Image 1 (cartoon, rainbow, N blue to C red):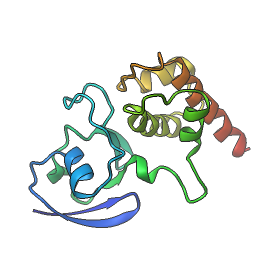
Image 2 (image 1 turned 45 degrees about the horizontal axis):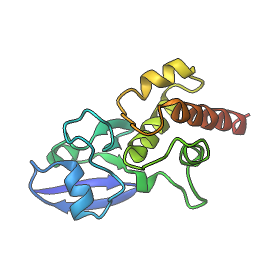
Image 3 (image 1 turned 90 degrees about the horizontal axis):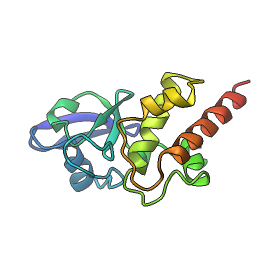
Length: 157
């Protein structure tokens, strides 16, 4: 099966079997190893990528379903001028520790901040609930996302 898709802003043509998991194709065929496998069952969020701007668990998506979509992986989050503000605050606030959940958390946080600018800490916790982290206790992650959100808001004023 030939799949045409845009990944991190680059048009790609992928020749693979349509039933393969998106996670495996990203890592094994495209070398985008930033996307991590945690549980392999769609429960932990470690493999989260953005598909047409929405978070999806790439371990649950058959690659045949990505035809014509726009994907963003963690490799596409940073810009030419450095880390995305979410990535930067996750590092500064201790919201990135062992690194397994971090790519999924960062992409989901990016989506959450774009979806609901100015969301409360409680709401951000709800929006990030699909991401399991065993290292941080979540407070550092939420604090980092709030800091990124506040930084983004102040840069738009």
